[in-house]
Length: 503
Image (cartoon, one colour):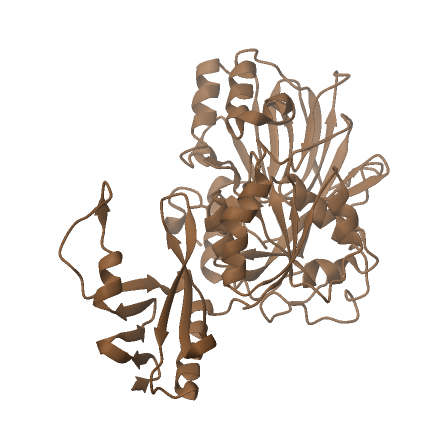
């Protein structure tokens, strides 16, 4: 017996698809799903149990006429593992079961693509190491259970992913999945950006991220987690989302940035602690403590194309983005018109065969445009520009960042404040309160130029990568890239009380 969303099997077993869960009425299996305390089952014996539809990976009629259901089972707060249910169909007609399976998978996947075709790049040396083991034990089984097509490469040297993505057959894959820290996503995006058809490639192939490094910012923002198996499930159920990318010019070089650029204490805490990679994310905290009491300053000149200068107006902008924007529409200022279909561009004349979009504001070698704001800073402590909210787990630096608003978020502060104030400022990052700190300037900008002064050497970080200590210029390209996300938005909470902002 069956309805559109229900199957009645032998021995009184029933399977019912609701709006958000699969309800299994099966006393035998329900006993195994009882809550346990110190390994001992507690509570009364249930007659049924449920699986969130988000966790359902696949269902099919398998060999010998069995209904097979595979799902991601949380075995701990840190790990998901593939679990299976199988039931004999008895006298149920296969077309009836097929129709029920279709209902289950449509509900479980929503607008997410099933059977994604993935190019997987595993960096065995990412962060503290162990990416191979993470891939084999935490990630690959979930992808296989979801019937994803997997083409796996283990990278052997820095920069290899750039060449792989530059030569990638973009019609053969839906997504590229780096299993690494944030360095490999940077390489993948820049590889796609080097192609003659860069814009088409960046639109067509989504970049996803399995966190295996120290920072894992891309996964934190898009998957809402730095746990590899939970990130894998987020990718299985991920929706295509347009992402702003940034062009960085330095000397005669142009590179793409998806995450951030930094000069000052943050750059030093990142790049100056490479020898401590074995500590994982804790190396950033060690570097911070080592440098915060030195009161080091970074003299510079900064020119910016400021679009939203006031924090109240930034909160209002964020509220509009969170409540009114639609991730299925790719907004592209460079193209000059909107396009839809889950982030897919509908334009043909302007972007399909083109490389990267032209630079609106020239390069770092050109004259600063007249309508930019320019200021000199003798005692800068930190300059940080971000395109995503979380820069690392528990480091929500850019609470007002949005994936496709065509703007970059810039924060900076003086370096001569007291150590106590500095610690208060930086610890407020963990609680999402940096935005409102009076010692921090927060702006939305379309472009900027940073020129170091009175220093022969230092650290400049682009997406965590070390570049030359010399002037650089950055501008944003709205909707140039494509990623997978859980909901078409960043998973960060946003500035405090953004819901109350006047719009």
